[in-house]
Image 1: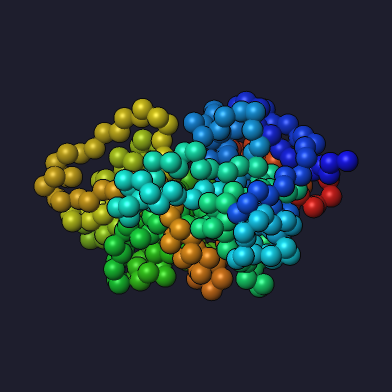
Image 2: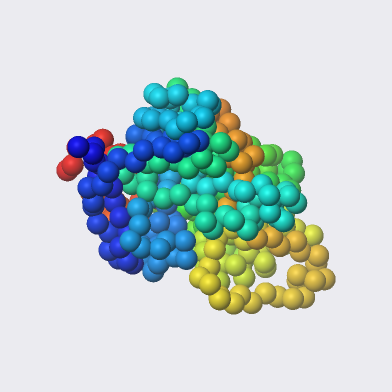
Amino acid sequence: MTATMRGVYFLEPGKLEMREVPIPEPAAGEVVIKVESATTCGTDLKAFRRGHKLFKPPMPFGHEYAGYISAIGQGVTKFKVGDAVMGINSAPCNECYYCKRGKQQLCTELEGRFNFGTYAEYARIPSYITAQNLHHKPAHLPFTEASFIEPLSCAVLCASYTGVQLGDTVAIIGVGAQGLMQIQLMKAMGASRVIAIGRAKGRLERAKQVGADDIFSSLDGDPLDYVRSQTEGRGADVVIEAAGTPETWSQAMMMTRKGGTIIQFSGLPGGTQVSFDATHLHYDEITMKGVFHTTPRMVELAAEVLSSGKVTVKPLLDGEVPLSKVEDSLIRMHRSEVIKVAVVPSMPEM
């Protein structure tokens, strides 16, 4: 008789379903993990609310994870059954035009190399991910924190684009999970002052907790005026947009000083048009960069900063829930009641 497991499936926007399905078996080069933690993510929330080009229902749901190796396929030598691991849900081909030019995050094969299904008791990890983007979990790092390795690796890639220097002032728009990780990365890289900008006072207090030097709520006034008042009228040296609205994309441009750098981290719905002040961009020599996803090297660095404690993700977690509470947790994220929640499949149902 085939052994089965419980797994959450995405059926359509606004509709999830718990299914009893066979426990996967690993093919050559693959592993199967017993999921100990699968953290909720903003991308999952977007897909749940309005759909997403990568989510083709009906399909297994969830993509952040940490757990134990429960089975290994032929040829796997890096891992053994019982190893505690953490990893991400994709890996580049390393053969295409972009991979060969050092832009693995833009790999032309990437869309077909995402792996989903970590809101489940077990998850199969394809060979290309096992080989490149699966890592041993340090013994001291809880599974609930280890499952942050994927979003943290995206934050690390973003941080690498900033060119932040000792003494810089950095403004971060948005105090969700990414903004809170960026605060810590900017401080670790030498920024002398990080200004966190958001709306909810509770989240801004959390920004203070993880290292923001100043916090400002857009409910209290114009963030642009505030940042300029704190920088002798210049604007910030570096601005990271992590809120995800056309307004904040435009706002980030005006918040940056002459010669400064803007990183547009948050994605917007396909086809969104954003207006910029061309005079400021051109005559003040602003550098503006988009950033997408991650690379194997950034995943390695994320593993290192998690293990070392340079970035602490515990303050970003708002509890643990069983598999049956995935939908409830996403709804709570949408309401800004929580930042991230750890889904723990072994947790008794409430």
